[in-house]
Amino acid sequence: MAYTIAINGVAHSVEADDDTPLLWVLRDTVGLVGTKYGCGIAQCGACTVHVDGTPARSCQIPVASVGNAQITTIEGIGDSPVGRKVQQAWIELDVAQCGYCQAGQIMSATALLKSNPRPSDADIEQAITYLRIRAAIKRASESLAQTMEIQHG
Image 1 (cartoon, helix red, strand yellow):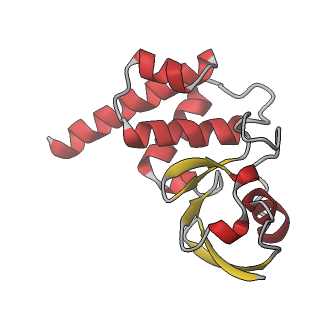
Image 2 (cartoon, helix red, strand yellow):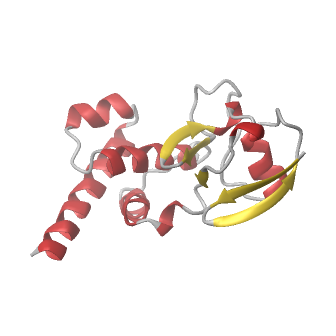
């Protein structure tokens, strides 16, 4: 089947079977390899992308179900102010260890801060298990708050 998928603000025409996971369309067809395959059962989060702004595990989303949704991958997350702050905090706090799941973690952290720009420590702990990632989310949240204060006087 032929599909047109909006990925990071760009329309991509792709050929894939209806049940092909979005993950493989992103990686193998479009060439956006930042989204990783981890467990294949939507548990680890390495394959997390945003579908219309909501985090989703791309290993379990059939390409046929994407429709007109806007897909954002790790390659495009820095185009948003929140995504940029999360990436900056990741670098400042040297969050990445092996790095394999970092794209998915950044996508999850960005979604958290978009829905809750000032999360409590409990909110962060519920969303993320890794200590350095929690610290990066806290720093990005504080940076976002400062940016909002400057913009709104």
